[in-house]
Amino acid sequence: MPHDAPSTPGLGEAASTPPQGDPSLLPPTNRWLTIPNAVTLLRLLVCVPVTVWFIAQPDLQIAAAISLAVFGATDWIDGALARRLGQVSRVGEILDPVSDRVGIVLIGVALATFGYLPWIVVVTIAVCDLALGTIGLTRMSRVLGGHVNFVGKLRTAVLMAAMPLHLLSFAPLVPDEPLRMITFWALMAGTVLHVVAAGVYAARYLTASTPDPRPPAQHPAS
Image (cartoon, rainbow, N blue to C red; front, side, top):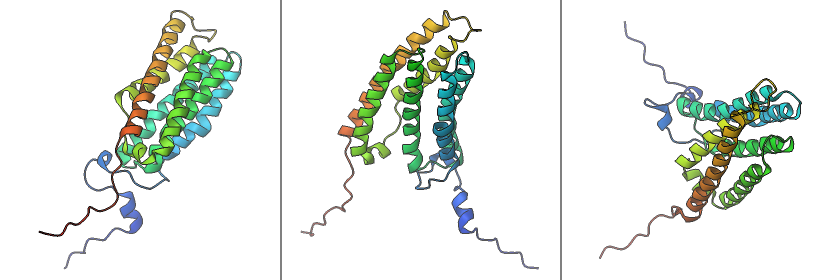
């Protein structure tokens, strides 16, 4: 008996099945409805308001610190999912950093308002993000073509670890020292790294060359 011919995958199946190889090596796509992007939106629309609400309540510092830690963890989770599932997208490349920056500033404002964080930290971060965002809007092609640098990764790791631990030091059941002093200086270091990272990104956006979309001129043969 003849063997059945292998079936040809449909359009939906082909779109959801990555080619052979490492999915993390796939180029970014124009898709926006992906699992990593959903995680990013949940971080911004759920984790941020819940964290701010906990911060505003007296004696809920532990719950606020846990919620803030979840906010920081989802920043790693969505990127890991995008690479693992081969779902790196142009929308995610913009949505993820915007979600991070907006979330950190909003949570920082809440922390400073209720006396958990120095205003200088929040103002410095907000001013750097506003300036970098303004530059990025005028250099969008260069923003999409860039990658996260080491200083940016270190900055995010320091701030995401120091903020919930510093908040935790204000909980009634947690000894405040030496945790508060250590995390305070970690926040200062993270703020300095934030300024340095913003400067590096700004220099990249302003100086990187944009590829010329026009085809090269054809010269007649001599």
